[in-house]
Image 1 (cartoon, one colour):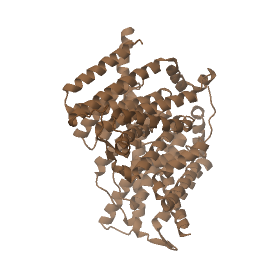
Image 2 (cartoon, rainbow over the protein chains, first blue to last red; image 1 turned 180 degrees about the vertical axis):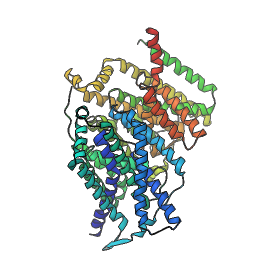
Image 3 (tube, rainbow over the protein chains, first blue to last red; image 1 turned 135 degrees about the horizontal axis):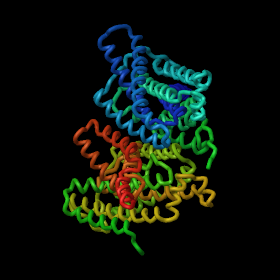
Image 4 (cartoon, each protein chain N blue to C red; image 1 turned 90 degrees about the vertical axis):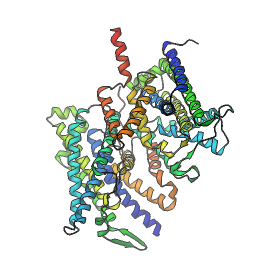
Length: 299
Length: 315
């Protein structure tokens, strides 16, 4: 019973983390049709900004601990905004309209560049910002003790998911965005500023990526390479869900999270590849992912 | 059998390379061996790219080739390098025939991601296998060629180099013939428009399947040669960043000619070696900018520099 509960709790915590990481990737793909390999770097940039800011805050003992949570989010917002605007305006804007797979490779180049930029800015030594994590304490579920910070991540990712879904499905801007996705040329003809839409989407995506990193930073030590580790996981989640669907990403994250937790508890040797196993299984039965749309074959 | 101009020049260059091997310093031989071995893997990537599929998991077969050579010597007493390389290709072909059944249903990003997933699964298995050295991998040694054991470090280095050049030549000629043959030309038609190829009465899916299996064999040969040259294999060979490197080299060279991957692999190795030496913390950045530069300024790769000159002469 305890181990089942542990699987459920661990699974949903891991799933919410996965969803946080994958949300930005989904948004960017959904609107711009760019499968962004550099997303892991946005995650790492968020983690580094947050960890260095929070570390600085606590080292100087300036004020109450709750402010550190605002700092986490603030650091992610600012870092994501800056990086997003620079990359979209400076590079990606020039590349639109190319092959989807070529865009993957372009963002791969971006990933290589960003990885080293981070090493230049933050060095190669680890950064720690554990205070916000330990500050919240733990909750007991029977024999299990779970960190409250991890539990609150579940809430945060649920909120982010709902907000994104609401934005896309229930607001006017969302409708316009869907029009852009559906037929870019007609949208332009109807007077939609597609370029602006793309910039905004990309920046939202980078901010989401940075936010995922910033919120994870207190739970890990921030070292070079964390972005690379994350990116393939996020890809797997997004592909399982059917590229570009927020709901799909959520379901994909849950599926992966729960199966990974089950693997960790019952068959630890499978932990590393359970994610890819789930992905291969899902794609074997639904080649376009769970919520993906089948494309008509055109001559 | 008649040889065309390309094949004769390839053979001439290969002979020149082997002769060059006897007079050049060891570090250069090593660099060239690794570059040519990687170029074989890249040939596999390029074969699939020509028909429109980009494999983000070619490291899978690179790793299979390397590990088969290593394990053959370590556990099964197969010390003959040629036999081990052939075994690696057989294993890769068997795996590819199985995975290909699933993978050929996918195109574009889904193909890329699924091939990546499979190589990551192998990575996961290897990392979790203590008897294979987990993340450290293990050493490959005591190999022979037809019962002859090359003496000392330099002798074996030269032997691997010669083997790699010969393997490169054979594969290059085969691929050259394939791309010129009718079925090879259809590959590009599949990339342009699959449905039309179907209307011609051909099955793109089985064409892609054949491509996938052949590419796997060629790539595993590259992996096996790398294992012989470095004397070491580790799970990193199946990690997705390794596969990324192969795509990088493929784009750098372009799809224009069978020699392009070899040239690109040598350029890549030289750039990387010097970048790591000069700026250890920013070499990836240099690679990134190079890749962007190639995509923007040389969309058809380095080979377009050569072919552009040629077509200019004709006009």
